[in-house]
Image (cartoon, rainbow, N blue to C red; front, top):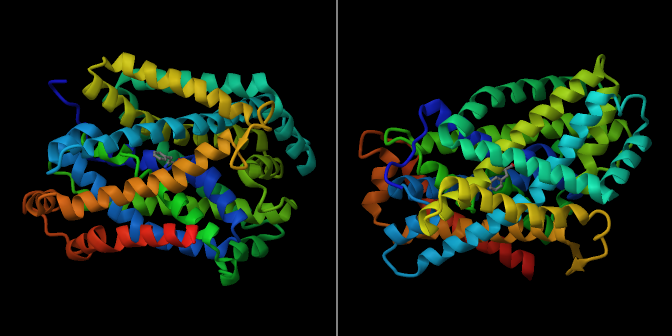
Length: 445
Ligand code: PHE
């Protein structure tokens, strides 16, 4: 690749990066993880993880990406003082393919729900009927596999169009729209009968809920939601302009991402309690709760179509970033054309995505360590690979990279003087790697 792409505008770069972070992680995964792990205490530990681990890892990835302007392997090869470290990049590519596989299954569910909403298939249902509808759908092998494959095809079409025309344009328009809609739904939830029970579940920490599993889960959720540890943000930063402020972009990503997760919680939990759904229902939580919310609203069918359509957009701006990490790798390391690289990424994701889709039906009996393939991919990628990746990037930037280079990147060669520079570098070097290690040890012991 001779001429490397850059995002056309500063806003475009931020919108695409925030678009990568904001996705199903916030709206689908955060409520169900919080629901399974006791609400308020989970939120508290989650916020701590975003602050002490998430932001430092975002910054570390940004520094590596923009200093090298390469894919993860190329970047590590170019910047590392030691040979062989670039092999770590292969792990990132593996993790990105794992995430693509289970994530596209949920994106497929969203497509099904868009179609159901358009056809009016959810109107007049009780909560019980909504739950049955979801169960029937995910157990049907053809339907869920078909939607997963269809989703990956759409993802492929956008990827093929490349950076500026595909990714940037889509993010610019649709992300703000999602925020507005989410606010409207939060407002609506505040008028539900069990609003206080829902809000106090989310915001009142019950410290007896803190357990090793919960803390590992909160860390995994923070990494997953911020898109860190996988080299997605590294790859995007390789397309940033020289005068973009890395620290400002990192803060924007963390703030927006966290806000959207909290808004999703405010939207979902009052409804969970008002409609008698169990907060620990797991991955199906929002698919059981949302239809009930829409039903009780005037012109609910229309809201449903809009909401699922925007959720779909939020999801696809994230899958594009996951795919982009491996596509940049295939293009630059293996010399593939962009089109072929996108195709390879799509085909591999289709094979494993279909297997993950079947985890809820015919393959539900196939488990490894007590987890179905879907659960296993999610668990291993989010709770193990991403934090390990994050720790690696922090150690790399904090200890192995030339200090001057790091400072140059963070101050744009001395033209910026960010106030938080020193504490941030301290977090990258010490706090984040130690905290990640501590959580792992706590989880294992
Ligand atoms: N952060 C994305 C979301 O919240 C998912 C994601 C994970 C994207 C890892 C890139 C890397 O939906």
